[in-house]
Length: 529
Image (cartoon, rainbow, N blue to C red; front, side, top):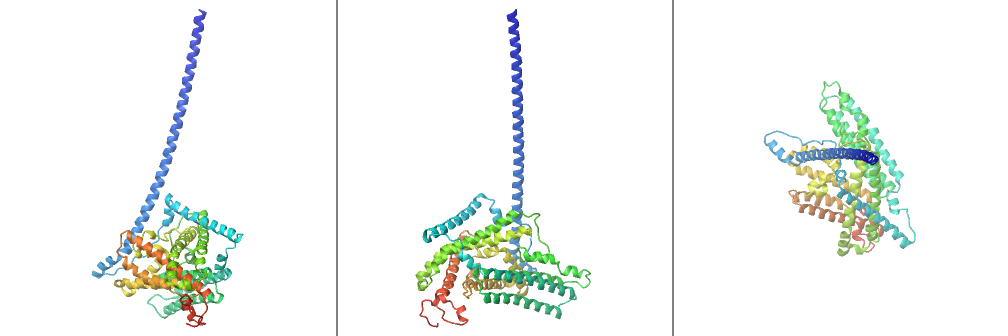
């Protein structure tokens, strides 16, 4: 009996234990299910977030692509539209520049891991250049010098540069806006009269003085190359800005109706709009631009650091590939063999300088200011590297300058000479652009050697008609070959002339010495040419 009772108790204990184990196992299983369910929910939320982000990016890209396509259709097919319109006896103007919120092309490309790798490769090359310079100085000179003499020389007399920049900027604020406001407020509505012609004459005088005074300042103080580039580039930019502001708002004032009670309010924009325009990264004036909602100061600092890195990049390229070849310029460089070797030796570094200058100015510098000013339309360039025609390359390489040339030179000339003579208007655009490019180089190097002018206004303009119908990808190869050769010629010829003026004797103590290339006659006896 006792054994049976003990056995029964043991069975009860065993059953209770098994029940607890089952209950415990069920609890653990329930907990694991909850954990798994939570993981699934988290994963679903993450998938939902990724999907929404992806759809947002794709939708934005589609909208940007649609806007770009519309612009290309409007500009690219305008000829056929105008032809059909003219046949019907109606007049149609060229489309205006439209500002919409858009990101820069490289900003979108940098989101792709493969493109970021190319960016990292360029950073690695910069590091290698730096190490190469350090090791060269240590092994050859026994010490490393951090003074970067070439940069210090190129940006010399910087206080004088800033003084002239302040004067130029102040003139646009103190002279341009108050003068325009006075003219707009006191002009009587109606057709153009003597008062209007006086105003236009004063504008022309101001622009001529704005060109002449900084030029005389450069000559008087003998500013070095980089400092001269800053002055002439800012001079050109401010001339284009003030012309845009006056051109847009003069038409508004001239078309003012006599019975408009809000004349003073509608005819002249607020000073705050003008001030914003002077600093925002566009050359086409509008009262309002698309704006972003916030500022990322980290993005601003990153872009300015990239500009600084590009500056050192260009320094290393000139220090390693240009100066050693041309600093001892002599008669050996003038021979056909020496010239050809020099040109091909400059092709790669010259094209690298093109890339780096494009990235530093049109991407980093403009995006930094756009971010600080919450400027929404950041399409400062398009995918020019995919161009199969030179006409598309010129339109997409520098959209900021192209928009100004298209709006205030090309469109106005088409209205003046007729839409049927669009080639003539295009030739004038190229001529004006080539003149100002050559003007900047002439002020930079302090001699007139119109290589860029001839290549830009001559061969560059001719290539438009040569490749105008090209759509095959082989034309893209042709474009790149032409860019490599052109940049090699530019770097070689300007470097030869720059160092020839240091190493070759002066033969003419007059103005002709500035316009006759000294590198052509360096091998002649020391007598007047």
